[in-house]
Amino acid sequence: MAESYRRRSETGGKNSGLISTDTAVFSSAGKVYWITISDTGDVEVELNDSIDNSGTDKWGIKLDASVNNIFHAVFDPPIEFSTGIYVDVTSSTALSCYLCYGEP
Image (spheres, rainbow, N blue to C red):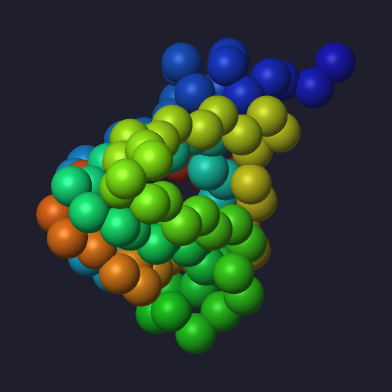
């Protein structure tokens, strides 16, 4: 039986720490288990399979502050990255972003 995200994120997931701008989170293959985003204004965030914003977008979201400025998602199964994990912030006012990641 495959190990669920819950088991992996509880025992071996790493917290990215506060992300507030474009950031290379991990520089080799990995997985993202969850992400939390908040901002006081409109925000657009993408997760790229790269180490420098040149790779493939694997996931993204655009949040409108007038509707919801706090978002949390759990990925089960986790999103897999082959090159690296890069957070691309297209627009933001006061971004606070955290994600749980780990090695494959």
